[in-house]
Length: 106
View 1: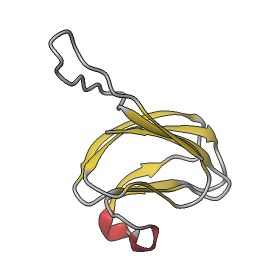
View 2: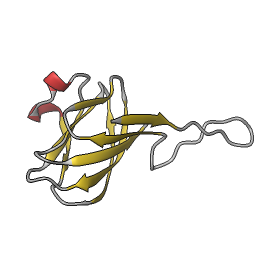
View 3: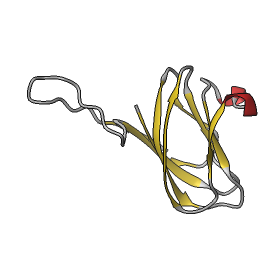
View 4: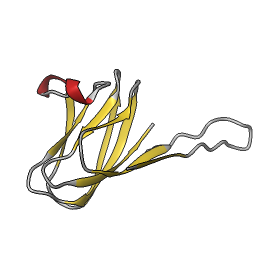
C-alpha cells in the first residue's frame, strides 16, 4: 500500500480542491485506515473485483468499522466509483474478499 498527497495552489495562493481528491492510497487489500481524522472519500477504484463487496466507513480505526458507520459499499466489480461522502471521524476502507482497491480522498 502506498499513500501520496497532492497539494496544489491557484495563482493567488488559494488551495485548490477537486472532486477527485488531493490524496490517494493505492493497493488496499486489507482493512486500512485511509485517514484518521475528518475528510471526504472522493473515489474508489476497484482494481481486482474479488468475490464479495467491501465497505467505506466513517471511523478512525479498522476495529471500529461496522454497519452503523458504513457510508458506502464497494462493489465486487472492476471500475471507478464516485463516493463524494464526508466523514466526520475518519476514513476506513475494508475491501471485500480478494479485492484490491485504490482510494482518493481529501
